[in-house]
Length: 192
Image (cartoon, rainbow, N blue to C red; front, side):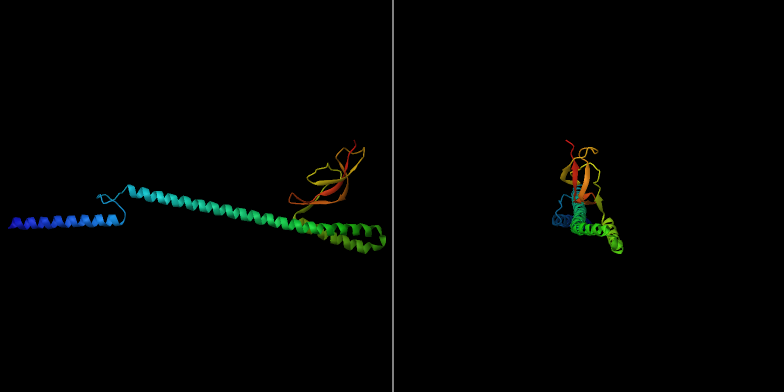
């Protein structure tokens, strides 16, 4: 009898072990893992590590793309701002030209000293605003002709000056942050 009880206990234990293995296999199959008794210890971490690496790489690419987008947007804003400012300054240059002509006209008449003083103050304000905006006059008188900065509208002769030297400025040129807003209109010496 004891032997029969022992056999029954062994049978029950064996059945319980088989049942546990079956349950374990079902759990592995549900999770997509192999039911080989191993947990796939080396295979799983590699797949997960590879997926993590892929996600990290995607994240880094997205961050880099965003940084490039932000940098491009900032550059475009700066360029647009400079373009708009240059356009507005270009329109004010025409007003300044007429103002300077009026100032010269008043300077010739000594009776209008107080008017001349007021005009000089207004001209000084123009200069201060242009300086704040980064607008500079292009130096042309007695300089070598540079087609990037000057526009030759006349040719002249003067044996005292070298060829390609500017001896008269007909209209002042201006630049803003190394970008020419308006070329200086000049007369260039040609002694040939």
